[in-house]
Amino acid sequence: MKDHDGGDAAPLPLVPIRSAEGAWLEDFEGRRYLDAVGSWWTNIFGHRHPYIVEQLKQQLDTLDHVMLAGFTHAPVVELSERLVKLAPPGLSRCTYADNGSSAVEVALKMSFHYWRNTGKPGKTRFIALENGYHGETLGALAVGGPSMYRDTYAPLLLSPIHVPSPDCYERGPGESWEDYTRRQFQHMELALERHAHEVCAVIVEPLVQCAGGMRMYHPIYLSLLREACDRHGVHLIADEIAVGFGRTGTMFACELAPPLQYGTGAKRGITPDFLCLSKGLTAGTLPLAVTLTRETIFEAFYDDYAAGKAFLHSHSYTGNPIGCRAALATLDLFEREQPLASNRLLSNLMWTQTAELRAHPHVAEVRQQGMILAIELAKNVHRKTPYPAAERRGLRAYRHALGATKDRGVLLRPLGNVLYFMPPYVIAPREIEWLAQVTLEAVRAATAD
Ligand SMILES: *Cc1c(COP(=O)(O)O)cnc(C)c1O
Image 1: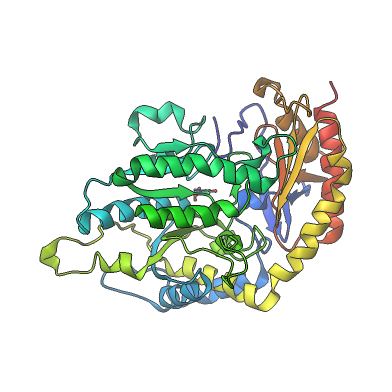
Image 2: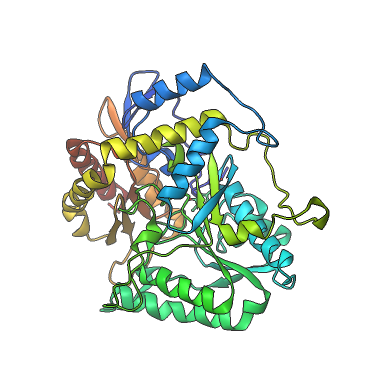
């Protein structure tokens, strides 16, 4: 069976987990595993954070669930108000779903439907980046880059226009991240020039293509893309399902986009037309997702019933109160504990602790954006020749790290030849030191022959 992140766990016995606390998982024999990938990028404040647990218990004592059609409830109202305040300026409306893929479906459908309602029914396609990932439902899968997740289902999928990625691992020798990113943007500009008349929206993962191997690019891409989408009359969908909630150093990755004209007093940051959030939204406790959009887009759906313009999309558990409560507790913790500030120390430490890894003869690159650090293994690091997938180097590193010591292991879960750290923000400095040490040993073991 192939999983979400492309690993196949088939030849390995499953690890049954009995309990979890903070950055650690524990199995039935009392062995502990450091959750270095935040349980697939969802966990940001550690497992069973006492404050979130307490808030959930209170919510369960009050209201479990009610449908969000014709009815509403306090947690969803409060959460929407707080998300709107936190999100890039101009995003004022929230649509809820219960997983990231569905949040992407909402953005795709709403963008298409907006153009249809405003007299442009010929806009039916999307532009997406190669190597991108947006989820596994058919619409979300279609806008993902050509990949092993997607290719099997190709006959069932929409046909988006795929544009080469700004992924800076592919930059030329001596070329800066910014120069390469700008160079790659030309493909996007060309695609927009050719196809804007038939395109609803461009969808991207801001700054880090996570499932695509934690490949990263310079934030100038977002600034250029925002300007070009406006000029061509195309929406911009920012899929921050993985990178939102502080992963890249700011609350949302879109905040890092630099102004296009320096020295004009313009501020950093762009506002997408749709912002998709999930994973960290509930700090890894419950499934919940939200798509934020602009007032002008919302208004295109708001009309007399007879006009037939309404956005028809619902899920049974839309805006589930317990999920919303988990998200509210998460936002409380962002205010109370200021993790964006303390994460700077942790991300610096992740960098300094991986110095030996950077010098390893089979490490082609260590790259980092905030609380995401990725280690790219290669057969030949000078030519960036990857190890053949069949050699399963990442898997070897994974196994080695799981069995690090008699009673403790590290959960690394590589993406092919890429190992990465995406830990909960409560990871302790000495745990980062140990994680880096175990990873170095795992890399040595995985590249020994
Ligand atoms: C995980 C992910 C999704 C899909 O979210 P699910 O909750 O797994 O459906 C979509 N986009 C990005 C960028 C993701 O990392």
